[in-house]
Amino acid sequence: QVQLVESGGGLVQPGGSLRLSCAASGSIFSINAMGWYRQAPGKERELVATVTSGGITNYADSAKGRFTISRDNTKNTVYLQVNSLKPEDTAVYYCNAHIWAMTGYSMNYWGKGTLVTVSS
Image (tube, rainbow, N blue to C red; front, side, top):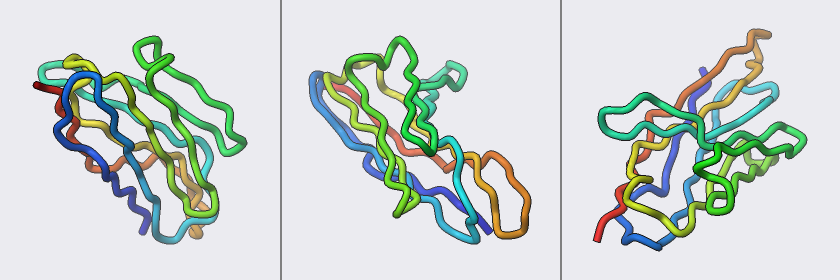
């Protein structure tokens, strides 16, 4: 069984920074793209950033210049460095990964999310 576990969320003041982590574990053969999404209260889940297994990144316009996605393939972990946080960045941040399991099947997996609250 494959699972994704996020960590690193919390309460931060406007202008502050956080580093979110998401580790994949279980019967993993390989991981393709990994990414971060977020869902603010009353809004739909939206893309924040993605990174391929080769390190190619893609960002939502709202994340460009302030957020940096990276991954450590040796640890099956993806990170999101979030800087210059604004109150509108308040959301539950979800990790997503397309994973090939040892069973030979692939699918998209989601973590349970980590809450980021930006408030003074």
